[in-house]
Image 1: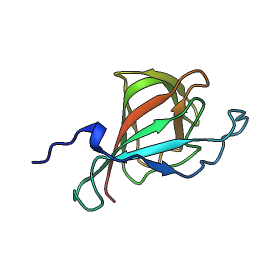
Image 2: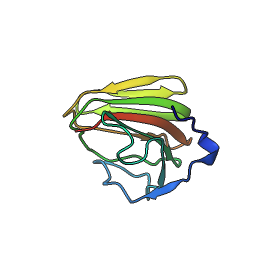
Image 3: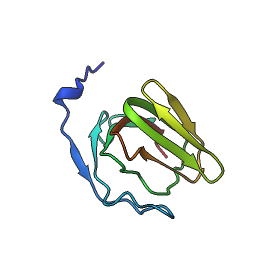
Image 4: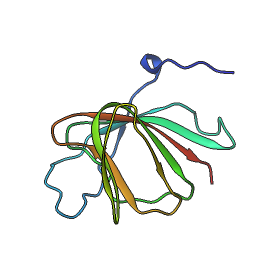
Length: 119
Protein backbone atom coordinates (compact mmCIF):
# COMPACT_ATOMS: atom_id res chain seq x y z
CA UNK A 1 0.00 0.00 0.00
CA UNK A 2 1.17 3.52 -0.75
CA UNK A 3 -0.38 6.82 0.36
CA UNK A 4 0.04 9.95 -1.78
CA UNK A 5 -0.58 13.61 -1.03
CA UNK A 6 -1.25 15.81 -4.03
CA UNK A 7 0.70 18.63 -2.36
CA UNK A 8 3.84 16.47 -2.27
CA UNK A 9 3.85 15.42 -5.94
CA UNK A 10 6.00 17.49 -8.31
CA UNK A 11 4.37 19.25 -11.26
CA UNK A 12 5.96 18.25 -14.58
CA UNK A 13 5.41 20.70 -17.47
CA UNK A 14 3.84 19.14 -20.55
CA UNK A 15 4.82 20.25 -24.03
CA UNK A 16 2.41 22.05 -26.35
CA UNK A 17 -0.62 20.21 -27.70
CA UNK A 18 -1.78 20.26 -31.29
CA UNK A 19 -4.64 22.73 -31.58
CA UNK A 20 -8.04 21.52 -32.74
CA UNK A 21 -9.67 23.04 -35.83
CA UNK A 22 -10.95 26.53 -35.04
CA UNK A 23 -8.93 26.81 -31.80
CA UNK A 24 -8.30 30.42 -30.84
CA UNK A 25 -7.30 29.89 -27.20
CA UNK A 26 -3.63 30.68 -27.70
CA UNK A 27 -0.66 28.79 -26.34
CA UNK A 28 -1.45 25.70 -24.28
CA UNK A 29 0.00 25.35 -20.76
CA UNK A 30 -0.46 22.11 -18.84
CA UNK A 31 1.31 20.25 -16.06
CA UNK A 32 1.11 16.64 -14.90
CA UNK A 33 1.49 15.16 -11.44
CA UNK A 34 2.19 11.42 -11.80
CA UNK A 35 0.21 9.44 -9.23
CA UNK A 36 1.93 6.22 -10.28
CA UNK A 37 5.60 6.20 -11.21
CA UNK A 38 6.53 4.47 -14.47
CA UNK A 39 6.29 0.72 -13.87
CA UNK A 40 4.57 1.07 -10.48
CA UNK A 41 1.52 -0.86 -11.73
CA UNK A 42 1.19 -3.66 -14.26
CA UNK A 43 -2.36 -2.53 -15.03
CA UNK A 44 -2.81 1.28 -14.76
CA UNK A 45 -1.29 4.68 -15.40
CA UNK A 46 -2.64 7.56 -13.34
CA UNK A 47 -1.88 11.27 -13.15
CA UNK A 48 -3.41 14.61 -12.29
CA UNK A 49 -3.34 16.96 -15.27
CA UNK A 50 -3.75 20.71 -14.73
CA UNK A 51 -4.93 22.96 -17.57
CA UNK A 52 -4.55 26.74 -17.54
CA UNK A 53 -7.48 28.81 -18.82
CA UNK A 54 -8.29 27.74 -22.36
CA UNK A 55 -5.67 24.96 -22.46
CA UNK A 56 -6.62 21.68 -24.15
CA UNK A 57 -4.94 18.43 -25.14
CA UNK A 58 -5.57 18.46 -28.88
CA UNK A 59 -6.95 15.38 -30.67
CA UNK A 60 -5.57 12.03 -29.49
CA UNK A 61 -6.40 8.34 -28.89
CA UNK A 62 -5.45 5.74 -26.30
CA UNK A 63 -4.95 1.98 -26.67
CA UNK A 64 -7.11 1.38 -23.58
CA UNK A 65 -10.14 3.05 -22.02
CA UNK A 66 -9.45 6.30 -20.17
CA UNK A 67 -11.27 7.54 -17.08
CA UNK A 68 -11.26 11.29 -16.36
CA UNK A 69 -12.31 12.52 -12.89
CA UNK A 70 -12.72 16.30 -12.79
CA UNK A 71 -11.18 17.67 -9.57
CA UNK A 72 -11.24 21.45 -10.11
CA UNK A 73 -12.63 24.07 -12.46
CA UNK A 74 -14.73 23.54 -15.57
CA UNK A 75 -13.85 22.02 -18.88
CA UNK A 76 -14.87 20.23 -22.04
CA UNK A 77 -14.43 16.64 -23.22
CA UNK A 78 -15.20 15.99 -26.88
CA UNK A 79 -15.01 13.23 -29.46
CA UNK A 80 -15.78 13.43 -33.16
CA UNK A 81 -19.56 13.49 -32.56
CA UNK A 82 -20.18 14.74 -28.99
CA UNK A 83 -18.97 17.61 -26.83
CA UNK A 84 -19.80 17.72 -23.10
CA UNK A 85 -19.08 20.37 -20.50
CA UNK A 86 -17.64 18.97 -17.28
CA UNK A 87 -17.31 20.25 -13.71
CA UNK A 88 -15.93 19.09 -10.37
CA UNK A 89 -17.16 15.60 -9.52
CA UNK A 90 -17.94 14.58 -13.10
CA UNK A 91 -16.46 11.32 -14.39
CA UNK A 92 -16.01 10.63 -18.11
CA UNK A 93 -15.13 7.30 -19.75
CA UNK A 94 -13.37 7.56 -23.11
CA UNK A 95 -13.28 4.26 -24.97
CA UNK A 96 -10.11 2.69 -26.34
CA UNK A 97 -9.36 4.03 -29.82
CA UNK A 98 -11.85 6.92 -29.51
CA UNK A 99 -10.45 10.11 -31.06
CA UNK A 100 -11.01 12.84 -28.46
CA UNK A 101 -9.71 15.96 -26.72
CA UNK A 102 -10.25 17.56 -23.32
CA UNK A 103 -9.28 20.68 -21.43
CA UNK A 104 -10.31 23.87 -19.66
CA UNK A 105 -12.84 26.42 -20.80
CA UNK A 106 -11.54 29.85 -21.79
CA UNK A 107 -12.87 31.30 -18.50
CA UNK A 108 -11.53 28.81 -15.94
CA UNK A 109 -8.72 26.46 -15.07
CA UNK A 110 -9.45 22.74 -14.97
CA UNK A 111 -7.77 19.72 -13.39
CA UNK A 112 -8.62 16.06 -13.72
CA UNK A 113 -7.28 12.72 -12.60
CA UNK A 114 -6.68 10.53 -15.61
CA UNK A 115 -6.54 6.74 -15.37
CA UNK A 116 -5.64 4.58 -18.36
CA UNK A 117 -4.74 0.94 -18.70
CA UNK A 118 -1.23 -0.11 -19.56
CA UNK A 119 -0.93 -1.55 -23.04
